Every structure is written in structure tokens, then in C-alpha cells.
Length: 190
View 1 (spheres, helix red, strand yellow):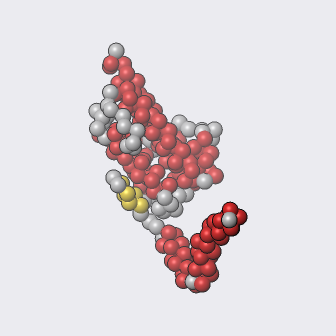
View 2 (cartoon, rainbow, N blue to C red; view 1 turned 60 degrees about the vertical axis):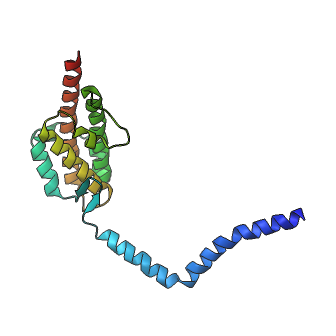
View 3 (spheres, one colour; view 1 turned 60 degrees about the horizontal axis):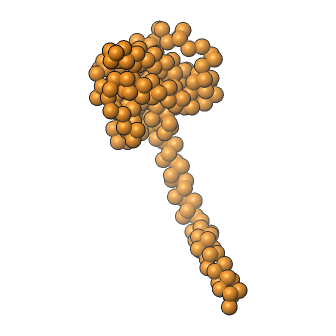
């Protein structure tokens, strides 16, 4: 009786995968049409929208953020070819953007901690940063960098190598400014 139960168990565990395979085979033309439609729509994504952000990647948006951050001229000399974000941007532009923003987030967390603002690990640092005493200009720049990072991560728009490098350089300037704020906040507590 035990071997019969084992055989029935084995057969019953194979039924649902067999049913799925049969359905895919039976309706393969419909499944192919659905997958093709999804792939076509994903290729046309121009904007990414989520809770608290809406963004699209564009070289103009990157230049605007760099200008607002005061990074256009000074950024070109601040990061050399040895910077990992710049090297990544040359290989895979979106990867360079994401890596550069991770560095900004690290500095954001440091500033938030030093400023005495309650840090909630469940919320993005850029959202928490909005409640701090930091200059409004910097808050806007960080929000724009976060939106562009989201657009890059979700493939909303074409990211050129040059715009990704400009983003990484701007992010480095912002990270240094956040570091200075974090040092000032720590110094004001003592």
C-alpha cells in the first residue's frame, strides 16, 4: 500500500506542470501574441511613474540638474577615469547612474543621522531628506537625481554614455555637498 501511495503522490505532483505545459502548447499562438504585445509596450516606455516620483531620462534633464547643482563646470574635473561610476557608465550607462546614486544615498543617510532627523530604513533617504533643514536647492537636486536614477533603472528613455557620465559627476558634487552638511551638522551638536 505504501508503494501505491508513493506512486500516486508522484503522479499528482506531475499533473499541474503537465497541465501548464499542455495549455502553453495548446494556446501557443495566443501566448506568443501576448508576449509580443508586452515586449512592444516595454520598448516604448518613455516615462516611469511610481509612488512619490515620475521621471523620464533625457540628456536635457541631466544637464538641468547639473546646472542646478552647480556641477556643470566643476564636475568635469572632480571625477577621473578611475571612478567606478564613470567606468560603469562607459560600459553600461544605466549601471553607472545607479551606482552613482547609491553613493549619494550613502551620504544622505550620513547627513540624516548627523542632523538628528529620525531615519526610517523603510523609506528612501531622499524622502526623509525633504524633512531636514538642508537648503531647498539641494533638496530639489537630490529629488531630481533620484527621479533620474529611477528612470534609468526602469529603462525610461535612452541613456547615452555622455549623459550618464555627466550624471555621475553631478552626483559626486552633490555627495561632497552632503558630506559637508553632515560634518556641519555633527559639529553643531558638539
